[in-house]
Image (cartoon, rainbow, N blue to C red; front, top):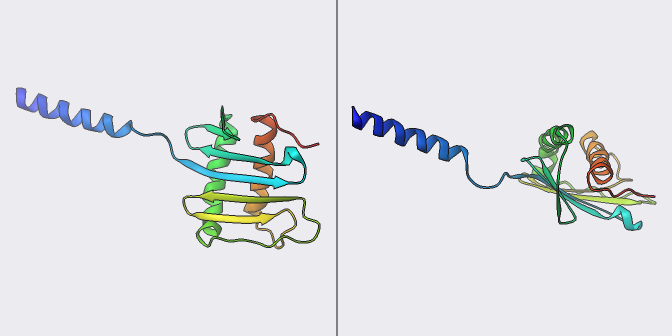
Length: 137
């Protein structure tokens, strides 16, 4: 009986230890750049509900975390191709995103712009303003 209890305790300990561990993985890193000083920002969005804004860790509201998770899924096919779209004329902002699946790069004037890229630009703007306190003029 003691052996069974010891075996069960060991198994439970392994299960609990497997649930703990290292830090949550990053969903993606996005760098937005442009001529406007406030346009330049690097966000590292983590699956644990935090974002690093230019090196400063902040908590993400749940709705922004859910959007980030969906974005990571939506961007994966293009990232697997390491898709880079050339900028069109009069580009103001450029974006580079890095994720486990690969990288993407594009500008606000790149055409055709996949819907997931447009959602990434909106997400970057929302997080920069709402979480990082950085808005463009």
